[in-house]
Image 1 (spheres, one colour):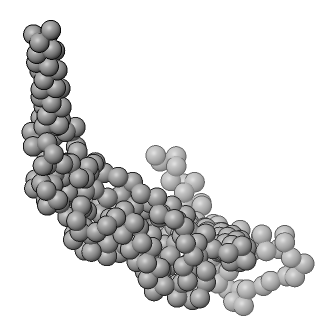
Image 2 (spheres, rainbow, N blue to C red):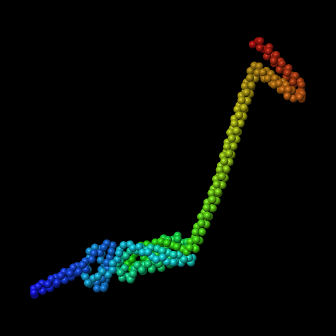
Image 3 (cartoon, rainbow, N blue to C red):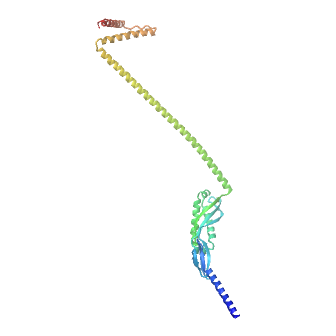
Length: 317
């Protein structure tokens, strides 16, 4: 019976030892996931930060006090009412993106870094919006975001947190302001439409005036060229007549130098002289008599002698 009891006691001791070893091994081995940091305290004091992978600690002496995710974390900040520089209420809602960069400071720098950066984001946002007028808040969203990030990031260094960016989701003014803004937008659009229409009419008048001016210039140029062409034609005709007349006179002069040339000229002159009086008598009821009848008689006598002389000369030829 003693052997049985002794064996039973030994088995219990072995089982207890095995359980203790298993518990010790389980407590001493820690597997840390990727992008995660575990803060270990030894006897209540900071000891180390476990990196991702397999780690060993001393059970019952060391303990994992804090677990931090090293991923980028989006944090939705509660909406709040901000007062702009021109005393207009504006409801602002945004989202904050941050990342734990120092697990030790994140564990001991503040009791709750999430609440800390949330409150700081809200107070900074109120301060930034308070320095702007209402219209500027809609135009300067990037400036507001950068100002909030800069202010929070400076303070968050002591908390082991890096603020990456802040984005405004909604900027909501009161309903009365929205209606006024809508009326202003409508008025601006109507103004642009009127200006565009007037610019169109102005451009139309300019185009018409330009076209009329170009047409008048083209017409005057055409008339000028026509006058030039006409003048050149008249000059050419006059020159041709003068040339022909000169040539005729030259030939007459040459003819007068030949035998019988002057006689032929005198005969032609007498014929034209008599013919002119004959035409004048036909076209007018007035009788025109030369002042010197002897000249006319002498010219007729000369003409008759020339004719008779020409008739007498022909048989000899």
